[in-house]
Length: 473
Image (cartoon, rainbow, N blue to C red; front, side, top):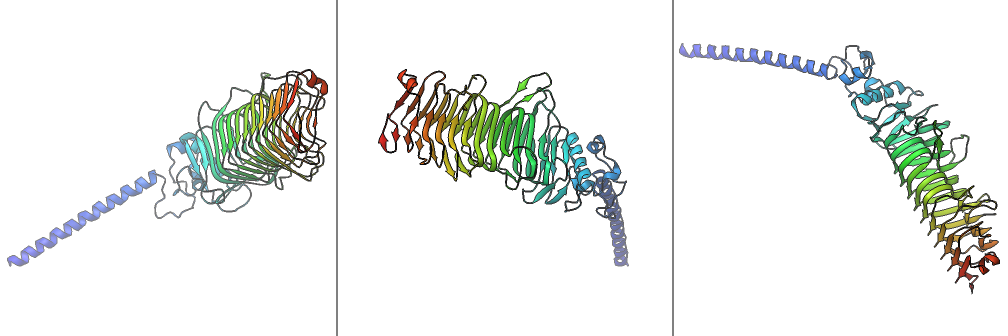
């Protein structure tokens, strides 16, 4: 009897424990559902991808003006465009644009990166505040396909920051009048966009790959611009910039209007009438292929062009108003075709400027050229491009001059290995305009042309040059 009583007591205790366990489990599940709802995670009885106005908003989404009905797939976090309906699949033109922009708008409130997963995202976006980045999964994995619009517009100014665009393939579908990444700026030079990094980005089929008016502290690195009419335009107050380890290819272009130039650097006249150029540019270890002109430095201050590889149809590097210091050093030039004019040319100026130009240790090769000059300073009728040193360059395949210093001022031409065998003259020194010119230790096949009166007066000094294997002055 005692034994039976004990068994029923144990049974009652087990039943009570199970009942309490069920209550605890039910309460825990209720709390979990509430927590999931608060975090924007759909309950298990809601199908993923199904629109439901019941999805709650985060505080940042509310601040960004997101409506509850905009949340299409709440299992994704607020900065993921798939949360708002983008599907990262190859759909219709700009079909993901609204969702992409919504994710960027939330990021402008919250800060951080908008992540783009593998796939094709259709649309264009505008970044309207600093502190927002767009990051993909790789330039062959994540595609931003822009149709009839600039793919990424940087429409903000900031005192300090760093916006990052990384690991993307930005496709323009032969966008003949559009720009892949555009920082249009304002018409005030004080409105700077401070801090931009473009890294591991593939840009294809745009009229312009990157354009900027007012930018400080920026870098374009490890990127590839293919089938663009103009790869990079820096037109205005673009300060402290680095363009490095990237490839710029004209290829088939995008069919747009305007010159075909790899890198264009110039000034902009702002609303107050101030003309401001770019300053402090480092252009190092890039490849420029297939453009009419590799680099055009129209107006800039302090520029280094070092270790680049050029293949151009008309000119490799052109410079006009480059103030204080310009180094064109250790580059390789492959100049091919009958349209080649110069590998390196410094155009004459209306007045003398505060400048110092060093053109050193470049390799210049010409193929099938007809009227080509390796290095030319000033033009037949223009002058004032002074204080130029042309040192230690290798030049072959030119058909007019290897080196021409027209209307010269102070400068040095020395230790060049000029071996073109079809040139009119190996080195041409025009009538001196000012200062002294030294020409020494050059090894030429062709002759050296100079003004005898300048030599007699001591303003032109020739020494230890070799012409066609014969010792010359």
